[in-house]
Length: 75
Image: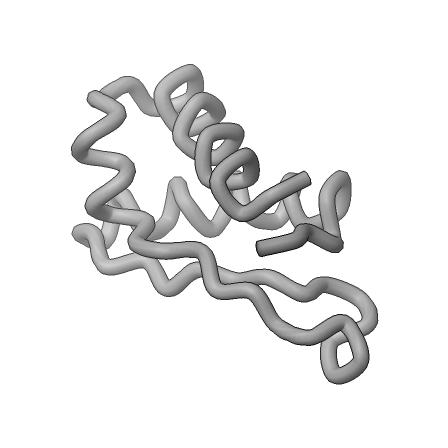
């Protein structure tokens, strides 16, 4: 799984769950940060949501599920 694929999965899940457009969710999510698995052995990616309070809450809910199913990604 790559960072771009994780972002696509995240956007698709948010659109199903909360509606909205791809562009709006992409802007609210921001870039996917990838870390070295040696220093982050349980989950090597993260995002820093920058949307409004409602968007950020939805993003955090979906992130919890995605981190469990896809803890490791490549750049």
